Structures are given as structure tokens and as C-alpha cells.
Amino acid sequence: MADRSSSPNRRVIVGLDASGRSTVVADASDLPIVRPSSTVELQEVWRQDSVPARLDDGTDPRREGALPAPPHGAVVRILTIEPFSGPSTEWVADLHYDDSLHIITMTSGLLDIVLEDGDVSLAPGDSIVLPASMHDLRNTSGEAATFVYTSFPLERQLSHS
Image (cartoon, rainbow, N blue to C red; front, side):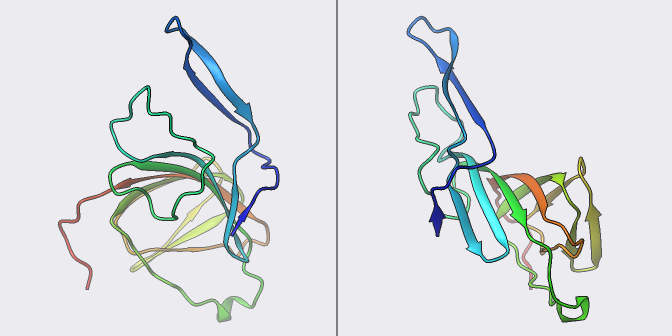
């Protein structure tokens, strides 16, 4: 599932030196590329297993994590969805949800967020907040759609039937 090929995205990680001064501790395009399907590419920018984070956490952000967000932490990812290649009449929504708060910000391309009562179209610079909401992602634009998303655990108070 993971492809260790070079990521086109650069990640700079800042930490503290021995004197407590801010310094760059990593600067590379080494994000693991995961392809959960033939049309989706995922790059994990940061995975924090628990929040609040600690300065001495020592977590290796390049390790492969599970796709769900950590149950007590957060994850920041870059996701690219290739366009749907069949006739739009063949596309079938796969509505799903999890117990997470997702914040999506588009960086390139166009993407439709399919909800139970309609769609929301996103373009570069647009953001959407999905708190444990039934949704699907649809790209019928003809070009790849890329976005950054952050996911946090969420305690559900309402249930979906």
C-alpha cells in the first residue's frame, strides 16, 4: 500500500535545539505515499497520537499509520483524488462517516462533497468542516483534485440510522 517514492510536497519540521531555540530539525520531501485505491493518493504530513502534544514526543512523522485518525490525537494529510472516468450516470455515492471532525481545504482542482441532502462544490481556497457527517467525495472535473485535511476524534451525541 505504501510507495516510498519521493513526494512532490515538502515538509519542514521545527523543533528546539539544546539551548531551547527554534530550529529546523527536518526538511525533506519524504512523505510516504499511500494509495488506498487506484484513484486516491494519500500523504501523511503529521500524525499526533495524543493531544495535547508534547515537545519531547519524538514521534516519527514518516512512519506508516493506520488510515483512521488516532482515537486521542489528530492527523494532517494531503489527499489527491483522480477524476471519475466513467459516464456520470455510472457514479454511485458511497456515503460514509466516522467519529471524527474533518476539516478540508482545497489546494487544486474541483471536488464535490456529497451529503445526504445535496452536494457542496469546492474549488481551490474553499474549506469545509465535516463533524461526523455522512458524506462522499466526487471528482467529475476531468483533472485531479487535491486538498489538505485535518482530522480529530469526535464524541458523537447524535446517531445516524
